[in-house]
Image (cartoon, rainbow, N blue to C red; front, top):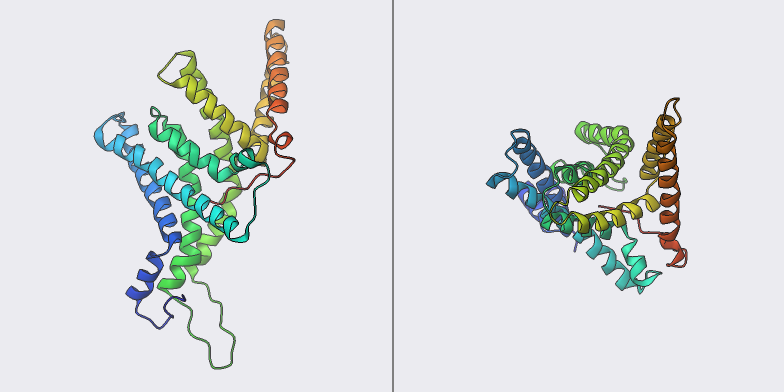
Length: 280
């Protein structure tokens, strides 16, 4: 059913937009951004276990689960309509980045607080919300003037929409590189928790390791960040004066890491099917 035309009252156009599933997706992203920023103020005041801080932290991951859940639902609904089956069965389903982020959002929701886990979700939400505002909300608030009889409709873009588009184009790639570095840093943070035998840390380490392994297989930014980390450590251990034992330990780490990477290559079990890319 087509929505109201550009001549309809603004309230009617906004109401029609708010009734779409895509608007719920946008509202989830916006909620995540607001609650993450509110939580950051509590964290800076070292009040991260206060009532408002806990509420904002948990609500952020509820919003994240909502947004990724909507994308997964729409993807599966489209597959069901066309009768398309995902190659690889369950493993192929788990290779979908949206399902991975949905699953991790649910894990973070019930796990002890790891504030660093909020930042990647917040960065993704910032770009997704900005793109929605540019492509969906602004055209409803300020629609293009109707075309003259017989003329093709003119595509106009407001200055705000152009600035949003320029922001996304300029900062998206660099932000994704930062996100990949933060996701790797978060793994080391969880390792530290596991060494200290903090509550549920070993379970979380296993789950997050599987998540990060899948990210490495699917995302060039993560691969680049791991490569840069390996180069830095290589330069450190190859420096003059480094004990031979340290070099041996690093060589063993690289060997075991390569063995783990090869053993957990999902394409070996899904018939070489490519993973579904993240769209949330």
